[in-house]
Picture (cartoon, rainbow, N blue to C red):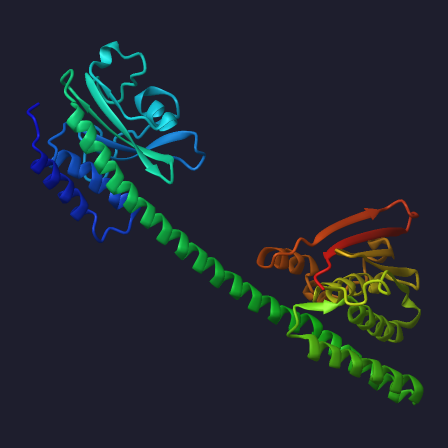
Length: 392
């Protein structure tokens, strides 16, 4: 191999630098690299390996020569574990290498056909190996120290462009993620409106008022209207709020249960209790979940009840979290299999709200649902525990 003059080296590197301008795809960049290695350096072949997502193997991503039967296609692409073969060792230790004679090299991994000499240099990004540029030749002792210097310079040029491409891609991914989170947040808000002001709840409440009026039960009519008005006012004033004071949520739940108790009368009994609110009066939790959970439980099981449905709700307010425990005793569905209302399939999906809030906000809302069928031959016990972060 003839000596390459400093001016020729400068022109070679300038060509490689100019070649990458405008390339915004990492795949296109790697194909450009191997193509230039062949066309500018006059090599027999060139292969670029990239460390895979596991960080444990090299993948062939671009090749020219014996591995490239047609444009931008690799013949039987292989994966090489880090530490194995010439390229695997370079990827593992980040040290470039020239092999003069592969017949004497125990680390040599033959791919398409045996090649006598080889050169491999790492592609580095922020001090880590992200890939390897490798070339083999049919002649022994083909690659020189000049080749090594040129390969290292080329690797540096292309590694810098890979860094820019990945940074741009990361920025775009973050932007798209923010857009998706915003969409989900808007969807959550719409679901909150639908859950809290569901046509079913409003319609049935108005029917209940009409029923009391027809019965000329003035006291119950006025009480129901008062509770219903408070509940609507609460929903309308908090509908834009993502976090709600626990004290207000408990008050809302009390109004809601009173309304449902007036509607269903002997169908169910309830208890609502709290502990710790005096110590942490400003405690706050994410909204939507409490009311949607209780409505879901109550409306899903009230039609089975002959007065034997019981629901106990207990809040425990701590410095960093708020614990909500719901224990509901309800009749076996098999005993009431002919009693069913289709609208229950449209009830608020409280678990979906929990999952969505955990996904789009820095919350860790934990839930645990358990059922005990051994209460009696006809009764079941469902327990739901929710641990909210105290975000007050």
